[in-house]
Length: 386
Ligand SMILES: Cc1cc2nc3c(=O)[nH]c(=O)nc-3n(C[C@H](O)[C@H](O)[C@H](O)COP(=O)(O)O)c2cc1C
Image (tube, rainbow, N blue to C red; front, top):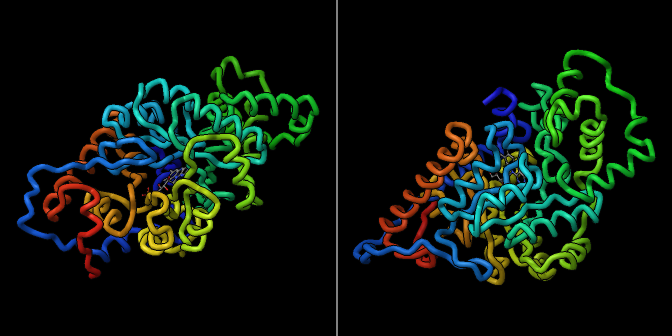
């Protein structure tokens, strides 16, 4: 990966103590296996929102994969489809969701949403996700503002400024219409041009490469810069509140999951609000330095929900044994993040397939060797601390 891509993917908030805490939390727990339980035949499948899944593993939504590999989200979509592991399309993808959906046949996929300042755009994203065969909407709540990420800051790198990771926007009819309206009013054109130096010229060129149509077509157009500016000013709405969720409910019949819930009281509020599922996550330690480890938050959230809705989990999962531990601590299913991005960087689609295959193979062995034949049996398996 380029230094910028590595900083963006591997980096986290502040001193990255939350990244460390995510791993330390897994290391705290040890599996206590049971013996003599006939584990020759094992079943990894689960049922989630009425769909049978081959295993309790999903792929996290990860943005800006175009930094990592030319095939970006498309390679991940194909790998996920080949192994029938659900892929959660990122709102910040490098490839429009329709292209990924088309590459996946009838394989399971979900869509992750960031709530922008335009409610109409939110509705449009959700409508496109439904049309593209997504079977759930994941609303990410922990990134109403981007975290303080020193590795990116040190390099002066923010991929979105170069027009990377905004493909869901530049392929959206509502976004393009709103951009056109703004241009007509002259509001973006009248913003001051950045000073002319090597860096600003390089950024402008990158914006033109990344905008649909490519460099030649966009050379004389102001649209790429205007699209980046519009994205930067509208991508998120920090004023979002519980009451706003009604709007989302009105615009989709799909199950809605909230991602980034770590407090048991928020979990209870989600259940009361009629939310269909949660993802316990601290965004891989990218948002708040010093935040609670995701695994440490899981048992209390699972207890608060008390089986009423599925509780998914991510942040720090690096192996099949980690998947097992998260399930034993109350997760219904587990999402894999950075590891598949590293597989993508090394080997494109095949690299992602290798990572998923390895994690699942180790999970299957851990399950059997711990004396379990199926995922529900994991819940009853003891973990000990230390
Ligand atoms: C490079 C990168 C980009 C990400 N982009 C998104 C995103 O667009 N939407 C989202 O909800 N989460 C995003 N996440 C967070 C992941 O969905 C997930 O919560 C996190 O990767 C879990 O931590 P782990 O990868 O260390 O296990 C991103 C994470 C990384 C590493």
